[in-house]
Length: 293
Ligand SMILES: Cc1cc2nc3c(=O)[nH]c(=O)nc-3n(C[C@H](O)[C@H](O)[C@H](O)COP(=O)(O)OP(=O)(O)OC[C@H]3O[C@@H](n4cnc5c(N)ncnc54)[C@H](O)[C@@H]3O)c2cc1C
Figure (cartoon, helix red, strand yellow):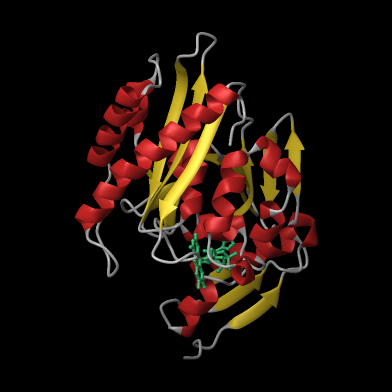
């Protein structure tokens, strides 16, 4: 199929892109990697009147690290992040998830900000942003604001971004000492969207007990699903098999999978429990070893 007719504008600067978006509003879409938008246009599931191409904006292609906190710009492609040694060192959860996203060809074009703006609940990345406590930096012609990942994903393919806003960068906070993280998923084939996936992050306190925990799942509801009650069960306790099994059982209760052509909702719920147990077990071992991932 071919897309419906649309106007095209190559952004000359961030300000230019934001001015075009302010003028066109919901009629216009930003074009980042095009790996979700162009197929949707070809199938005529999306029919924007205008595309504002972000690809000329080289100054938004960056990864910065400041005391372990990471910032990634809107034009930064998956592949750059995947092969960045600083990301592997400081944000191992992000490094671990990236090879699970699509195929190398798609990771050579796709961007993290495009993925997060697309807000596909089946995608791995929104769940990782929740588990990592990331923040999204939105800009419009009128100003800018930070949005916590927990407030960013509103519904299926819907974010807190306003029609005149662009996601300009994401920020992942530094992992505290004695932390361990893990991402794990089950997909039918490598590169497919997961039937379910879990991102977990644990930090031990000085006594070796669980000081903080976060768990988030993909393809488990209309948005990335935080298993907050499951994480809460772990706080203050020893991260042994019994505690982890209880948290995994709780996570199974918290998800709202819908099922799809590849698996039933019951199977996704089953996976949510099994994968949460495995992710927490790995994250706890990594926290104890001081290896993060
Ligand atoms: C065969 C195939 C397999 C895939 N498998 C997976 C997978 O396993 N897991 C996974 O997570 N994804 C998968 N994807 C999707 C891929 O990750 C996309 O790259 C990603 O979803 C979108 O990123 P993009 O940069 O290509 O965005 P685009 O397609 O360019 O844009 C997506 C949407 O976000 C908007 N947008 C883009 N950038 C911004 C911005 N900075 N601010 C505001 N809005 C913006 C666009 O207007 C559009 O509505 C797959 C894609 C294909 C084609």
